[in-house]
Amino acid sequence: MVKKLFVLLMVLFVSMSLFAGGQQESGKSSSNLIVIITPSHDNPFFKTEAVTADAEAKKLGYTTLVLSHDDDANKQDQHFDTAIASNAVAIICDNAGADATVGAVRKAKEAGIPTFLIDREINENGLAVSQIVSNNYQGALLGGEKFVELMGESGKFVELVGKESDTNAGIRSKGYHEVIDQYPGMEMVARQSANWSQTEAFEKMESILQANPDIKGVISGNDTMAMGAMAALKAAGMGHVIVVGFDGSNDVRDSILNGDIKATVLQTAATNAIMAVQQADDYIKNGSTGLPEKQLTDCILIDSSNASKLDDFALAD
Image (cartoon, rainbow, N blue to C red; front, side, top):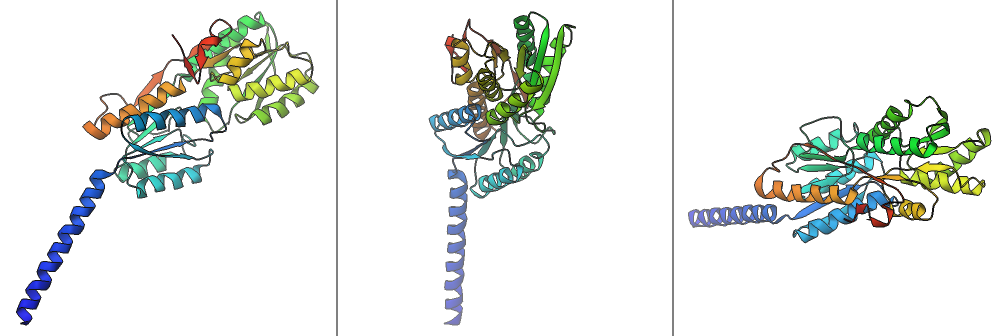
């Protein structure tokens, strides 16, 4: 009797183990979640990344979880933990810092979850499957050349720089100066970071104008700051000052068409987000994207000649 009971219990234990294993394997194979992590959607550029990646992933048959880290590396770490705990099949991320994000991407890789970075690189290779970024240096050269042309190769100007911890802020500034510094008549009277913020750019510009009421131009590290600068200039009765931005937002498009901001540089946020999701799909299905980790997409100069063709960080043919 005892022997029969023992055998019965063993059969029951094995059956339960097989069932649990089957459930676990089934759960693993049925995971279909792509987690999309970007900075705040208050910025139209980052919102476009998130919305476009979300739509493309759903079109390819995936479920999605869209999160924002607000440029907070600790919050980003929590989002990566959520992706890992949710057994995500991939992470699409516009990251919260070139150094601060390395650990999070490594953690995801060790958990078997591939990461596809957009817009911003990290300072280590071999962790993310793809790093798809706009060619910020090439774009800044375009912006710098247009700015010099608009300025007539001379005059006092101000530079508004993005968040100092953001690699792109430094790359864009370097590209601008690669061009501008070749012209002796161009005189920079102020250079300040407005941390990609429209409000902060407005406040910084108000302060700069008190000390430099005779400036001729402002070159900005992004469109949001350009909008803030333009608002401050117009409030001071200086709407004639030349302003050039970087990103290709709809707000700046409209400003260009209204004759206020003169130019911007389009980085194709929508295209890069779509590329990342498609490469994630390739990797999930085939184990490889067939492409190098580092990928650059060229930027496009936007001015009054083509601004009407711009919509949601994409240029119509």
